[in-house]
Image 1: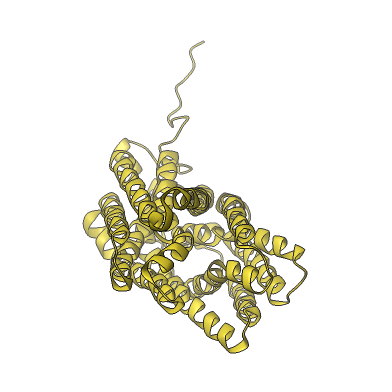
Image 2: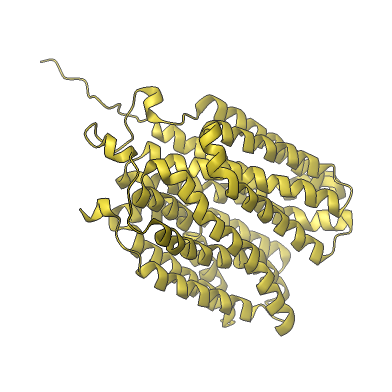
Amino acid sequence: MRQTVPSTPRFHYGWVIVATGTLIIVACLGFGRFALGMLLPAMGTSLSLDYAQMGVISTGNFVGYLAAVLVSGLMASRLGEKRLIVAGLTLVACSMVAVSQARGFWDVLIFYVFTGFGAGAANIPIMALVAHWFGRAQRGRAAGFIVSGSGLAILFSGWVIPLINGHMGSEGWRWSWMLLGALVCVIAVICVILIRNRPAEMGLHPLGVTAQQRGSHHQDVHHPHAGRLLIHMGMIYFAFGFTYVIYATFIVTTLVQERGFSEALAGQFWMWVGLVSIFSGPLFGTLSDRFGRKPVLMMVFMLHTLAYLIIALRLPDSFAYLSIFLWGIGVWSIPSIMAAAVGDYLGADRAAAAFGTITLFFGVGQIAGPGLAGVLADYNDSFAWSFAMAAGVTTLGVIMSSTLRRPEAEAR
């Protein structure tokens, strides 16, 4: 008896978009931002940078990122997501190679602002593509796999950069920047080959969306209070941006200077963070598909509140391992849940602009968090109050998440 051929392919091209998207996050956020912590000590010594200048360099990257977020929606509508991603990655690659040739603070700062701009230009459209390629029931998982790229990059940079420094000596950091820039360039070429803006370009429906549902998947969802909703979601995303970057910036310094950990042991801690965090996006993204965005957001903010309190209360050193696990297992989940949620609430066609809008709040949080934490630490001669502040803000994140309403499509 002859079998009928299924109308949808067994393997959907949406998963190629996800795999390529993971590489994009490896490149623009993983290498473009999170590798800096591994590179700064050697750079600081070589270029005679003080702590304030190191902080300004990191802030410069966030400022560039924020500038890209402001114009990403407009650029995506003009260029299309694929062209914008490739342009963003090309800028990241070129600026990272330029940093490798820097002769002082101003060179690094200027080039690294461009790295941030390129990172934002690539990150926003790839997260928005999730809403076009996946139906509501699959978006959290898809976005979760994409954001796990940051964890992969932390693992890679934590392994490779010390190796290069060991072989190349005091100027090894230059070779590290060049290697990372070259890898970003390779990923940009992969994007040229594999990224497609819409399933229709390949004669496909979005994964999890039937032909009957297709029209409603693409049309705007006319949320009666869209502006208020975006501010609400933006404030939740601000709480995450403000707090996670305090931990990412200062946990190693805290363990070394206040807990007496060796730099080697603290570095191993950071690699464990990278390893654990790889699972955060897929795990909580999938849970958010199953149980809803609101309860899972609340759960992640609760985990992070505990992670920050453990450090703030100066519990015994063994608890530091628990703190790092709690932080790492949740850290990339909130970007994936927020990317899925904007598609749920406002529809696929408004996802890029909406995700860009709430990412503005996130970006402001990233800039404000480390600055305030640093001031508190200087004043108290300890980071304990800085982590206590972070725990307070994530508690607000739990409360704000609890008041999110269900999307109309889910409520029906």
